[in-house]
Image (cartoon, rainbow, N blue to C red; front, side, top):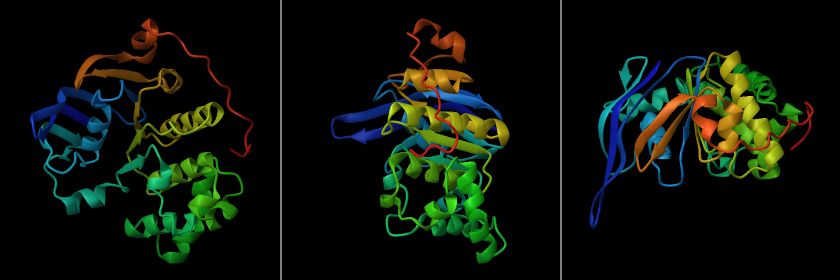
Length: 258
């Protein structure tokens, strides 16, 4: 489904080129979760952005990033704009910078459905919104659909961002540090939601994090990056065995508002 082959990303700096990612390769199948684990500056977010066709202005890329055989590194922006949202969903670190602050949540999700022709008209798109929010664990989805992003808690904003990301039924979900700004209990809830969506919808999940607790909670496979290079990859239990195991935080009861 997703195949990354010898991916390198280099940026031109005043004192010389910086290679942020160096010959990284991995595969990700439908229904599988892969955690890209590394410290700040390890290159993990650059890999994720390359998988979205968004390596950045001035970036020089080598290798291949194949989504069902289509190379995202050579695709033009028009093609990529059709792929993002429809075939690849994205969950950001900070939903406040991702959600439009001037539009209510419902119209934003309905707009995504219409843009990618995932609903038959305005009424069908609007009618689909509460179900999508409910599937993302949002209590009282009708109220949340009428709310502006700033009227919601951080946890509800992130759940709304998840609903937006999966609204058009993508094959791949890329989540870049999606729980950094949340408290421990809400972090656990959002991670459990991502893991459940991966299983229920046969989604491939690429999760970027520096957080060992998040890596433990998602499970699946873990790929460790250091200085732009992939230094270890394998089943989560095996790769994380040498790291201290964090205390798991139980999820709150269903419907609890956070």
